Length: 136
View (tube, one colour):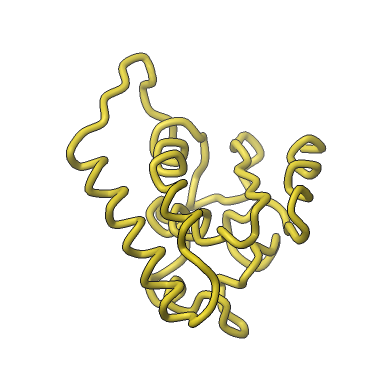
Protein backbone atom coordinates (compact mmCIF):
# COMPACT_ATOMS: atom_id res chain seq x y z
CA UNK A 1 0.00 0.00 0.00
CA UNK A 2 2.05 2.91 -1.17
CA UNK A 3 1.25 6.49 -0.34
CA UNK A 4 1.87 9.80 -2.08
CA UNK A 5 5.55 10.54 -1.56
CA UNK A 6 5.55 13.87 -3.40
CA UNK A 7 4.93 15.68 -0.12
CA UNK A 8 6.44 14.28 3.03
CA UNK A 9 5.16 15.38 6.39
CA UNK A 10 5.86 13.70 9.72
CA UNK A 11 2.69 14.16 11.76
CA UNK A 12 2.08 13.83 15.47
CA UNK A 13 0.32 10.54 14.72
CA UNK A 14 3.47 9.28 12.96
CA UNK A 15 5.59 10.26 15.95
CA UNK A 16 3.20 8.52 18.34
CA UNK A 17 3.16 5.39 16.15
CA UNK A 18 6.97 5.23 16.30
CA UNK A 19 6.83 5.68 20.08
CA UNK A 20 4.44 2.71 20.27
CA UNK A 21 6.76 0.65 18.05
CA UNK A 22 9.65 1.36 20.40
CA UNK A 23 7.56 0.37 23.43
CA UNK A 24 6.48 -2.86 21.71
CA UNK A 25 10.13 -3.68 21.04
CA UNK A 26 11.08 -3.10 24.68
CA UNK A 27 8.15 -5.15 25.96
CA UNK A 28 8.76 -8.09 23.60
CA UNK A 29 12.43 -8.37 24.53
CA UNK A 30 11.59 -8.09 28.22
CA UNK A 31 8.98 -10.85 27.85
CA UNK A 32 11.43 -13.06 25.94
CA UNK A 33 14.05 -12.66 28.63
CA UNK A 34 16.80 -12.44 26.03
CA UNK A 35 17.99 -10.21 23.23
CA UNK A 36 18.16 -6.47 23.07
CA UNK A 37 15.65 -3.94 21.74
CA UNK A 38 18.17 -1.24 20.73
CA UNK A 39 18.26 -1.87 16.99
CA UNK A 40 14.48 -2.31 16.71
CA UNK A 41 14.01 0.92 18.65
CA UNK A 42 16.47 2.90 16.56
CA UNK A 43 15.16 1.52 13.25
CA UNK A 44 11.54 2.22 14.23
CA UNK A 45 11.19 5.51 12.30
CA UNK A 46 12.83 4.15 9.13
CA UNK A 47 10.88 0.88 9.14
CA UNK A 48 7.61 2.68 9.86
CA UNK A 49 8.25 5.11 7.03
CA UNK A 50 9.07 2.32 4.59
CA UNK A 51 6.08 0.13 5.45
CA UNK A 52 3.54 2.93 5.74
CA UNK A 53 4.60 5.21 2.88
CA UNK A 54 6.82 3.46 0.35
CA UNK A 55 6.56 -0.32 0.14
CA UNK A 56 3.94 -1.84 -2.11
CA UNK A 57 2.57 -4.83 -0.23
CA UNK A 58 -0.76 -6.45 0.56
CA UNK A 59 -1.24 -8.16 3.92
CA UNK A 60 -4.26 -10.03 2.50
CA UNK A 61 -2.01 -11.51 -0.22
CA UNK A 62 1.54 -11.79 1.17
CA UNK A 63 2.78 -13.64 -1.93
CA UNK A 64 1.44 -11.08 -4.44
CA UNK A 65 4.00 -11.08 -7.26
CA UNK A 66 4.04 -7.27 -7.60
CA UNK A 67 5.02 -6.65 -3.98
CA UNK A 68 8.17 -4.96 -2.80
CA UNK A 69 10.37 -7.16 -0.67
CA UNK A 70 11.78 -6.11 2.70
CA UNK A 71 14.83 -8.18 3.58
CA UNK A 72 16.12 -7.86 7.12
CA UNK A 73 19.73 -8.95 7.39
CA UNK A 74 20.20 -8.41 11.10
CA UNK A 75 18.29 -11.27 12.71
CA UNK A 76 18.85 -9.87 16.17
CA UNK A 77 16.48 -7.09 15.15
CA UNK A 78 13.75 -9.37 13.85
CA UNK A 79 11.32 -7.33 15.94
CA UNK A 80 11.77 -4.50 13.45
CA UNK A 81 10.11 -6.68 10.82
CA UNK A 82 7.59 -8.43 13.08
CA UNK A 83 6.21 -5.19 14.51
CA UNK A 84 5.82 -3.67 11.04
CA UNK A 85 4.01 -6.78 9.83
CA UNK A 86 1.70 -6.57 12.84
CA UNK A 87 0.97 -2.86 12.31
CA UNK A 88 0.48 -3.31 8.57
CA UNK A 89 -2.29 -5.88 9.00
CA UNK A 90 -0.49 -9.17 8.39
CA UNK A 91 -1.94 -12.13 10.30
CA UNK A 92 -0.08 -11.47 13.53
CA UNK A 93 -1.33 -10.52 16.99
CA UNK A 94 0.06 -8.80 20.05
CA UNK A 95 0.30 -12.27 21.59
CA UNK A 96 2.56 -13.28 18.69
CA UNK A 97 4.85 -10.34 19.49
CA UNK A 98 4.83 -11.37 23.15
CA UNK A 99 5.90 -14.88 22.07
CA UNK A 100 9.16 -13.58 20.56
CA UNK A 101 11.81 -16.33 20.55
CA UNK A 102 9.39 -18.90 21.97
CA UNK A 103 9.13 -22.41 20.49
CA UNK A 104 6.58 -22.65 17.63
CA UNK A 105 5.81 -18.91 17.69
CA UNK A 106 5.33 -16.80 14.56
CA UNK A 107 8.17 -14.64 15.89
CA UNK A 108 11.32 -16.77 16.07
CA UNK A 109 14.69 -15.23 16.92
CA UNK A 110 15.55 -14.99 13.23
CA UNK A 111 12.88 -14.47 10.54
CA UNK A 112 12.06 -17.66 8.65
CA UNK A 113 10.54 -17.65 5.17
CA UNK A 114 7.43 -19.82 4.92
CA UNK A 115 6.83 -19.69 8.66
CA UNK A 116 5.52 -16.14 9.13
CA UNK A 117 3.49 -14.31 6.48
CA UNK A 118 5.39 -11.29 5.15
CA UNK A 119 8.87 -12.68 5.84
CA UNK A 120 10.59 -12.79 2.45
CA UNK A 121 13.68 -14.85 3.28
CA UNK A 122 15.34 -16.74 6.09
CA UNK A 123 18.45 -14.95 7.30
CA UNK A 124 21.06 -16.44 9.55
CA UNK A 125 24.58 -15.01 9.78
CA UNK A 126 24.88 -11.25 9.53
CA UNK A 127 25.20 -10.16 5.93
CA UNK A 128 23.35 -13.16 4.51
CA UNK A 129 20.26 -11.01 4.00
CA UNK A 130 22.22 -8.59 1.83
CA UNK A 131 23.19 -11.46 -0.48
CA UNK A 132 19.57 -12.63 -0.58
CA UNK A 133 18.32 -9.14 -1.39
CA UNK A 134 20.79 -8.77 -4.26
CA UNK A 135 19.58 -12.10 -5.62
CA UNK A 136 15.96 -10.99 -5.46
